[in-house]
Image 1: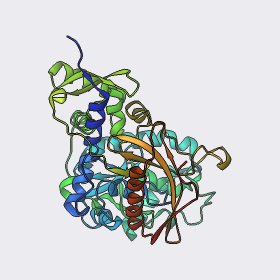
Image 2: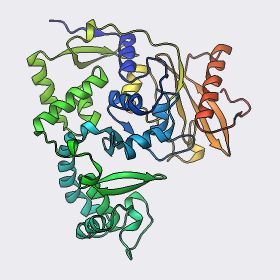
Image 3: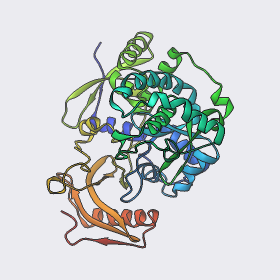
Length: 395
């Protein structure tokens, strides 16, 4: 039997719909509405870079332009509707997922005990009981409040003092949880004091979690290889995801499809059985500024296959060697990524240095106005009183 082909246009529409980028960015952007956005995405990556807005805030604003950062803090710290932990990176995750993260906790605990003692400075394992007692007896703390008298080193992630490493170990293994952030500094408390009892006390067999992870990833990607399913949450292994796909195919839960890339090449993937018959609306030609860590772009290779968009972070590239800028933001219009923009917040002003259109994108007056209108909205979101453009900013 021939394998159906999902055209590039259809694949883009489906993918963007799954990532909350096919509708208008309206809605209150707080409370249940905001929780629904995070549920739909599965998680939102947290990142510290703040040239304009932190990644998690820009991800949510791109989908709900009434969103403001306090709304996420309320969900995390006050309402406990989400929790913070690790996927492929630090992320905010729906609280309903917590019980499934126990598989991640167990695997991380074993992996860290084996590896971290080889490449982290000092004997962090000997500090675990002391750090745990500190939190148990005196309440929540951050990494600066443990390890008194220890050599602090450089403070970089590669050179944590032993008690900071122990605290991170306790978090990654699920024994403590992030109760809040002060600025961007994580504050930890015992997990039983943070996670609501209904989620704290729930347990799943590993097989249930593997099925939940693979099914949930396919729901949110629309189509994927087994490797992409494994990488989505980074909880299950590639071998487990491959076995899940094989079993789901035999059971008739999924089908194989060939997904067409922007270059016409086909990539064999898995999809739900009704994918080819599903009606997916066209994506409105709304222009949006995205975070470099937006879920739609997190997998750089997939973004290049689907959209022909090549993106690399240049933070660690010496300034003279950068092709674009320190931290540039992708710009999407409808189902097409049309360029990237270098902008930053400076003393209440949104300073726009440059916009580089993608090859074949013509910056006519209508498109320029759509971009400047979005920059005006971004400025209001970022607390800027005006937008200032460098001369010749459209390259």
